[in-house]
Image (cartoon, rainbow, N blue to C red; front, top):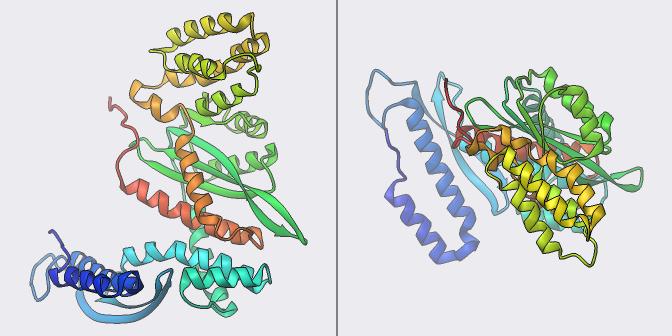
Length: 387
């Protein structure tokens, strides 16, 4: 059954924007969300309005009013109800989760007196209203329970594992401290991506990465055939301890950036980058090793330290040649996770400073949870051949 927005809704939206411009965005969102929830209920019931059918899944049971605070203002929503069913519009729930997390993070800063004037202004701009401490406490308790369940859900088999970290600022004991946000992404046997876990730690020390990896394994992570990451020392030691024998692909993008610090001033760095790229773009593992030998010999006389570094480090970026050709471009770097980290930064930089670990963990978990849900229901990231 195909469901489309009623033509009158489209006309209403256009008229609202034409009359009020972006000042009428709240009304536009209200109209669209209400209509989408109606369509979702209709899809859940399995029949259209006033229709009969053996496949009917419950009966419509009126509406429940709900006020939702968003960046564009407060929305007056009418949530469709279904008799004898736990139906609840998924679009509304998914769309509001990060909104609540961001509001909570900022409101906690307000309550704890961190940059009061600045944070109050941000909250008003984002939410279109003030947020009280009691509102925060109630919402945070419900949200934290949901996010905790997601962080602890079973994992299962994952063919590929991609891990990385980024840093955020937290106020601790009157000082500003940078904490590491550790993130792991998996690719399952069906080829779909999924965010497996997130942790907020004091640093990227081996002990923190080891604890993070152990938590993934305890939740059922198994069957990993390749790990892709940067070469951070703490991560490397933890990886060897927790995933002994699993092949490791060092991110080629990070390798090329690392190489720049070994290029002497009298050598053309652009030429060096092209040489390294020629190794990574080889047709297969044998061709890559042969090209690496040629590149090392080329720079041996003019830049011996660079040549030694390339000979020792570039092979760590060639593990990807073990994979099917169609998978290599996807897995030879951690760029997919880097893009996700940039999205995290875009969303967290509004807060600038978090009052505690819980506030930071709440926001990044909500963002990652939404992204993971989108990946799991979207297109495959890679395709595995079935035997």
